[in-house]
Every structure is written in C-alpha cells, then in structure tokens.
Length: 266
Image (cartoon, rainbow, N blue to C red):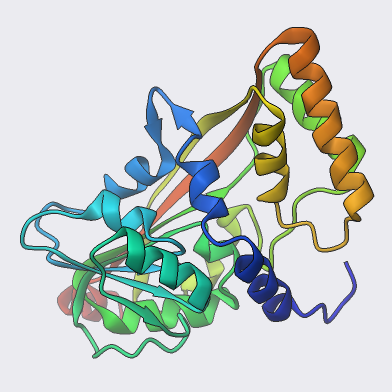
C-alpha cells in the first residue's frame, strides 16, 4: 500500500457505488443464528435513551438498537448510504464527520460502531470526540474484524480466496483493536471489555460469491483478480456444495469514567 493513499476518496467512491453492501453481507453472517449487529447491540444498556451509531451505513445497527423511548442517531459521511438508511429505518440520520460530531458535550448515553473504528482515523481523535459527547458512565462499543484460530477447512477457504486476490482486505486503521488501547490515554475513556467471536457467511451461488468479494475493501486489487476469486468460490460450490467463509470479529467496549473516579486517579 503506497504511503499517502487517499482513503477518503476510495471509501467515498466505494460506498457511492455499493450502498448497503456491508449490511447485506453482515446480516447474513451468523454465529449461533445471530449477527454481529445483535452482539454489538447487547453491549448497550436497555436504559440508554440516546445512542449514536457512527459509520451507520444503511442503518442496520439502528434497527437492531431500536426500542420504545430510545433515540438512535445514525451518523455517516456517505450520502448514498444515508439515503438507503432513511428509506429503511426511522432515523434520525445526519451526514457528519465522526471526528467532529455536531453534538453537545455529555449529551448521549452510548455510542456504537459496527466496523467503523477501522475506517474512522486517527483513533485518538475518534476516542476524544466520542468521550466529549458521552455522558459520564456512558459506553462506546465497536466491532472490528480480527484474527482467530480457524478450523483447517475454514483456513483453506480463506487462503484460496486471498491467493486469487493476491491481497488481503485493507482498512485505513488497524484490524487488531489491541492497538487502540494507547489511543485511549487522555480521552477519559477506559477499556472494560475485549471479546472475540467467529461468524460464518455461506456461499451457495454465483451471486453470493460476487457479494462477499464485492464487499471487501481491495484498493490495489484488479478486477481480473476479483473475478478469479469469485470464479474459484463458484467452482467450489459446484463441486462441494455451499462453502462457508469464516469472519472473525472483535467487540471492544470502553467506558467514560465518572468525574469522581477520574479525579481519584489523578
């Protein structure tokens, strides 16, 4: 990856061309019958009345978090995603920069982000502004792709795709959220949970293969290599039936420390 790559331009073009593709994949990526959206939503207290969904995309997390008496505000920079979110959910949705949220200090109970923390960079600036808008005792919970030990069959499938792409999926930020711990320093936030879960997406048709490859951020990969990965998956389904692709996720939860606790630590 060349230094100085324009991730902003790449992401804007990606989501303008494929609005809703991330939700389409993650809503079919399951563990025990549940999605990573459900897992992330479980980190939010039922008592949380105002929740901000950063990098909300087409609004899947907002729908998962919806409950009587709660407002879920979706924030994203991609207008194409927000138009889709508005058509699918209640909102409200705003087009805004997650590093400069148009919200008052200490005004929300929780902030969540599905896959957003690997896109919204730098991490310290993200944590700083999230810490600013959270009420004391509020939480910021986010999920990110990670690495887990895989079953040999799962590893073979992932390796087969990567070999044909000749590249791993890429993100602006680190995919191992352990690297975010240092970015918390001085933000008033502290880690309270770091958990992992393995999910699976089933490829059973050419459309499924095109969907899963098309949802990957592959800024340096040619269309020829993408097609090779799709064709390899399709051939596997013809020979062996449905192919399972494992996607490991990590849920990271941080807490805005109450003022009394922070004072005691100083």
